[in-house]
Image 1 (cartoon, rainbow, N blue to C red):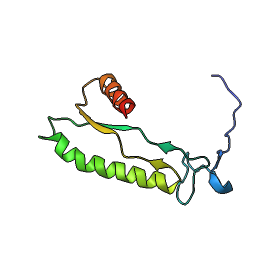
Image 2: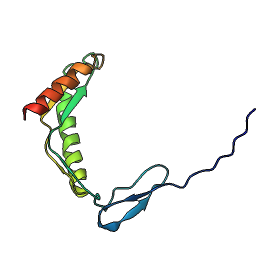
Image 3: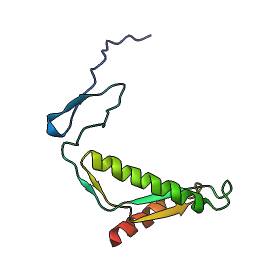
Image 4: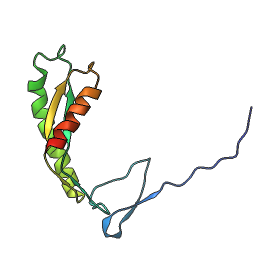
Amino acid sequence: MMSLRSRVLPPPHVQYGGGASIKAQLGRWNLLDVKLYNPKTLSNWVVVSCVNSRIAENPREGAEASLSAFTRTLQQVMERVGMHVSPPCCVLYKEPHELLDRPMMQAANEVCRV
């Protein structure tokens, strides 16, 4: 058996806007009540929903409300930390077994048209 010397490194400090520095705890950073150091705008993005049509009779019907709630929540959380997130350019609905390279290319083309 081989023996190696090792040590546990302390968690890093994450620098936020306003000079706030937060230490990671259990590999996570808490974004409550902080602003990002250099927030950006997310203006062009898409959602790809993979819902199995064998499980749901009309997978798109149930997914639309959930995806709408997800995108609203994402926008609200990002606004709180200083980012601006526009609504997604489009939502693509695909079967989970489909290869995602085509939907991703379709999504990229959709974003580029904006």
